[in-house]
Length: 251
Image (cartoon, rainbow, N blue to C red; front, side, top):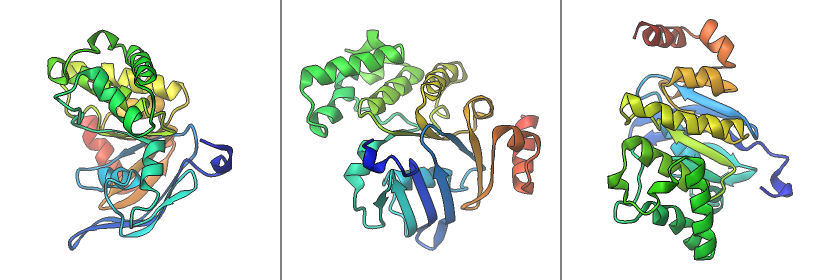
């Protein structure tokens, strides 16, 4: 991030609305994320959580309001999209790795094509990130040869190769078997401890309690609760959030 944009929040969302046909998925959403802040977004299925972070990364075009990444506006026409995607890494629920490429090739394709990095330099950085997520020994394998947890760690390393200012996680553990969840969460905790700005959509409330600076609860396209983890888990003010937490505790 250059000094010219250092005065701005990492992410600023103001009055954002999103429609899918007649259905309104986001309703006047406001969210500000400072550098180094770790936000967990939770809520029932269909509440708009994933839609919100997909709008922040430009994967969905918002219909009203403003989204800014480090002061750069991503408008509803998609202007500044390439610049913003260089600053924002995205990790998906279902990995989205290229099955015909090796792990190493999955990590180097974007730095080489988008950042115009030399192949040798891109490979050296990719191996360093694979080492960080403890999967370097699989660099020459195809994604289909790896477990789900290993593939998700590859996806995290791939996003890090673009040296993003912000990492977005869209339910990164929901497609994993229970025994694989911890290995992915451990990598995310490591990133958080390193000061990475993060927005994570997740139902992993243990992660939210231990890592988040703020927990945001969404319901029916709106943010209806936003609080520090201690307040959110011990004394949420919104009735819908109370019911949601009650369901989690019962299960």
